[in-house]
Image 1 (cartoon, rainbow, N blue to C red):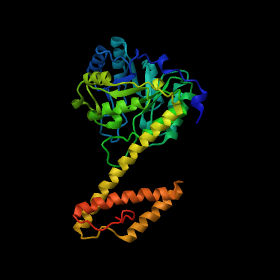
Image 2 (cartoon, rainbow, N blue to C red):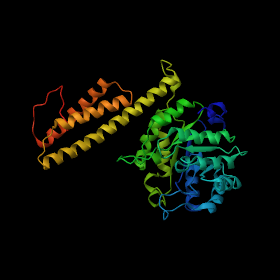
Image 3 (cartoon, helix red, strand yellow):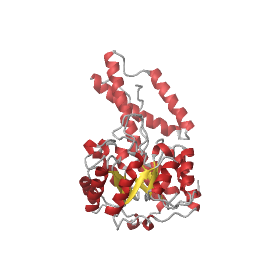
Image 4 (spheres, rainbow, N blue to C red):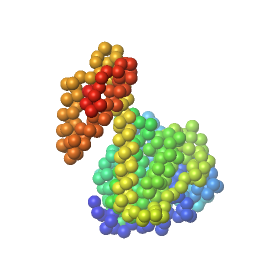
Length: 376
């Protein structure tokens, strides 16, 4: 996993002219019509948001009846945006044919989507088609939380001779209930950042949040974690968007968002904390947030258990169940190399809260020893 370090990457500022502002890649989820993309681009340009204009030309959708992009006919639209606004344009590519068309129509930048990054075969096909072009490439993380897959895709592109690369963090698929569309799993991009300090990493808050109201919070958190820029979906009329309407914001909202964001500067720290320690602490902060989310989910299930016990007149504490939980806890601690006593203490505290929740539900206050939590 060292190829990216061995091959020199072009510094972000040498090919991404952001005029001292927070680097931004923005545009609609899909290129729907020429009027829609042109109006969006011209609004962005008029407000000084002249980073890179993105638009999905080919859209890999989960279901076949969904809008899958306007295809090749949208490429001349993007050429006219280049001519009229001076903005660079970016599209998603998923195979060699897409790359060849991007090169034919002088597209400035391409990105590899999360669904493509999971396939080394697809990434290698794209890498082979890119050889000799030095076309800048954005590589989104795979849909699954697999750092090796992400790094592997970056390595394949880099080994093809491309030195202008940005990794894009767009979150990971999650089958548990969450207010986010995709779980951030911040520790994964932070690990990537620590492994490859010369690699620019952008955040895609639109896909992480899945709803427009989360874009600001996620954007600021990403910048606070040391990410180098943002990739945000914007549409002249989000409510009428043909794809991912909920997560897109208007150009005006994007302008206000960018004005409110602050890019921290790690170099101004009073204690000159080394970069490795900074990254490790960011990983800890991310994992701590996940721990709280998991505990919250557990307690929601505890409430359901309490309701069930109340409805069926079942006692709260059952010694056999408690012993089973603790035996499992000890085994997990052994498997994952965690101190057994520490794991037991954590489980005891979790059970104290679980018992309290169920006790409150049935309005009974049984005698529970403070140092001997009873089972659920």
